Length: 214
Ligand code: ADP
Ligand code: MG
Image (tube, rainbow, N blue to C red; front, side):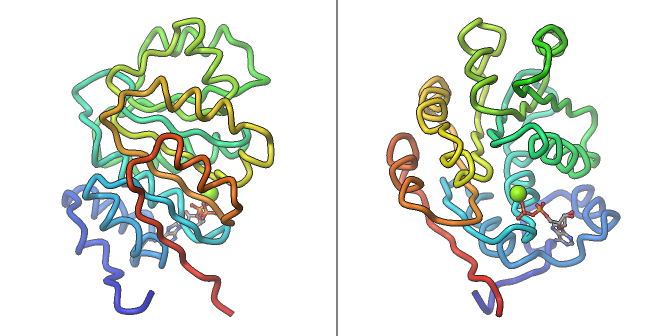
């Protein structure tokens, strides 16, 4: 992975987004960001693998924000995460990266949390939802989550979601998303199940692996 540009300014991002990254102290892209963002920003499906702590969240967050129309108040991006703790972290990071845009609403939908508040949030509307596959499936079953405007589906920590037995739920959720969309899969490891999962609903995904440095 040598020779890749690591300057965020080489990406097709707005001056506001670039200024926000600088403010956050993101001065250079991490290796997985440098390898995946140029491809993701072209709208291609991606399977990206890099170890924990390598900056995978910003890699998919910047891609989904690039697909987003802030003036369209409908769910345009959805991130599936294995746990509530991770979903909360992803939500926080997306909000930080979205600061350059006005009023982008992100909500989390995880199990173990009362449905009532989630139903009220969905009623008010959002641009982005982040959640666990089981609870997202519940909302799709009861019709409280509308995915008609969705253009980006992200599977974060796909290896852990497979470990937790979410294969079927993920496939079901993906099948309920519009066909015309970008799907981004991020993972720390690359077990066999990932390829099987991708084969169910991804479109000729480009595979990107950043090896751990020793
Ligand atoms: P991963 O999902 O790969 O485990 P995270 O997305 O949680 O990693 O990022 C790990 C940490 O690195 C976070 O604290 C995040 O804010 C920080 N980070 C991400 N990208 C950059 C960057 N380009 N420059 C500096 N810090 C970054
Ligand atoms: Mg992560």
